Length: 146
Image (tube, rainbow, N blue to C red; front, top):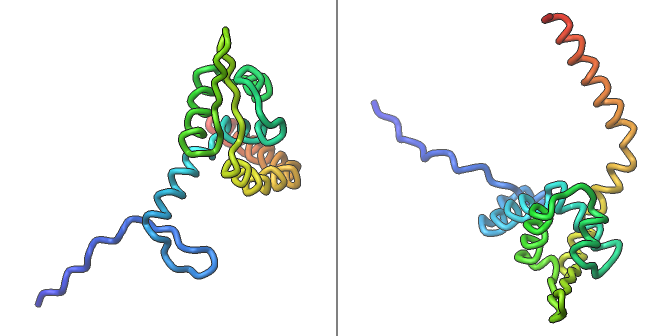
């Protein structure tokens, strides 16, 4: 007796948080892409810097972002420009002056991500304690092995 073959399981799909319905694959693709682009350390910090300070020159962004290489920051800002999150304005001067500023889309994303910063601030002590507990367990485990 043969049994009907079931189709291969589809790749994981996100579902709408309220309805539980699968997201449109096109929407899911954009969500995955944007999260991948802005969820890294330097993108989040650059977004925050531009939110707090408005239009800035590259060197000002870099100073405020911190210990990031010129190459990495350039890649981050280009990606944000590509996604429509910021505008890059080149002024025809010698030397050229380049300024970056969030677009309305970038400012809206910043407002959406503000909750992450607030959450981190509210829970920083709990996170520090959890990290300490983890480090202690790792030390104990390493001592047992040695």
